Image (cartoon, rainbow, N blue to C red; front, side):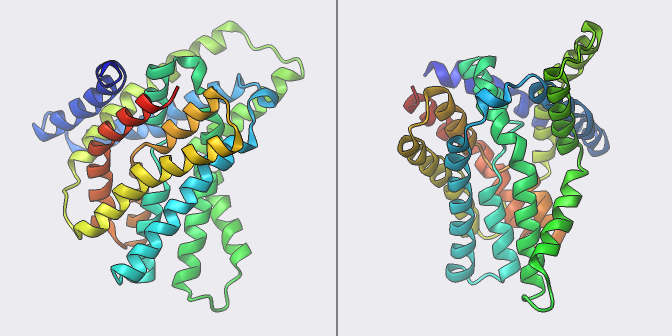
Length: 314
């Protein structure tokens, strides 16, 4: 019970505060979008820069951690896509968008604060390892799958589409923050010493990332309404909240992950779909109502599933 009140509730209270502020029209949609842009385009990239710059790459890179997490993620994608296409008889484009909702967990805005509150800042090393390839890998995969499906496989080089998608993803602020952090990490290992004032400024900006992002997340979620086909929403919730962390847990046991790696992998996998899952559906104009509703409903339900996994993990 203490995990619910001490770890989970504070994070979701900030999200809920943003939701209530927008519900009561104390902030306009434009203002909320501005806060989210500040968080996603500036503060969060600086947070990632700081984390990757100080990460011990040799000690913290565990391929089995990544395998455990991403096997669960891609199995969730396949389940969501198959259920939507074969059971619900949705078009292939809709099915890919629904699969992407099952695939793209909110590893950053929810995964980081939950893990930090549950296990402390030192427990975030595995989270940042997962996050370092999360957006580049999943967006490249999703865009490639969607473009290939829309072209029906005719006169289309899947490799060329993947490269074009990856090129676009590499220009996003989050990935730029990760890459800059990697460069700084390598330069630091080579002997570069940055002044304390530099790291002080980085720390100040990074400390604003999660509170502003969680508050804005609540404001963004207010716009979504639980509408659309409830069976599709249920598939997204089940795959993202039950299947993904369940498979990740089993894979972690199979691969013999340590306690810290298991915590990072399973807690991150248990997060609800991120807002980017809706943005992906919106980008292609398919399954938008299902994606938006699934993000909202799964975020609410994840309070219980996160609580369960925190009680299961050592």
